[in-house]
Image 1 (cartoon, rainbow, N blue to C red):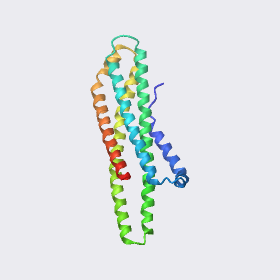
Image 2: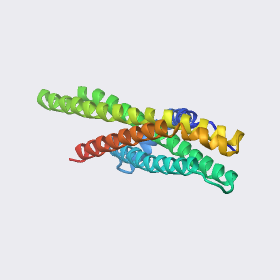
Image 3: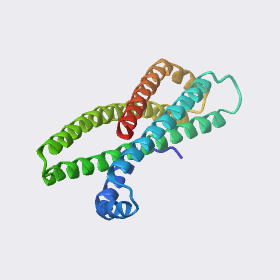
Image 4: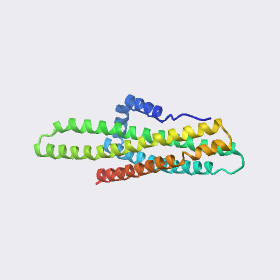
Length: 216
């Protein structure tokens, strides 16, 4: 069955879940010696890996679209099924990316809020200033990371929408003429997919840099 993109809905559910039990979750993790800083690094790694996986899936979907527009005889319904499967897999990967980015954002805000509040607990002014400077630097690096991840996330939307339209059109018109019409969209989809992969790679690089800075 052809499905409209559902990744945004999934992201909302994750936010609700995180908001409802984050305090208990943090306390449990802290009792195991795992601080918010560690959780943030883990979630950035997960978001990075999700973006890498999504990049591969969108490239695979593009390959299947190319194969579809080059259709030259055979069972067109099987071609449609393969293309639809690639679209649905891409939509699922996009949902995972969005959820992972939301999870990063959630723990980062909690970490920074806690850090800022704890600055008041210092008795030594020089240590407070050093910690405040480190907080500012970390927030700056995090801001660059989040901006890059959100750009990559947005770059998925036009590709998913285009694939959805093409798959739906093919579903309603299983004939050679429909395939010919899809061929006219190939250049646009290739450009959008190339931009998506480019933005994903930039976000992955930012994630690696942020992870290294947090571990140093």
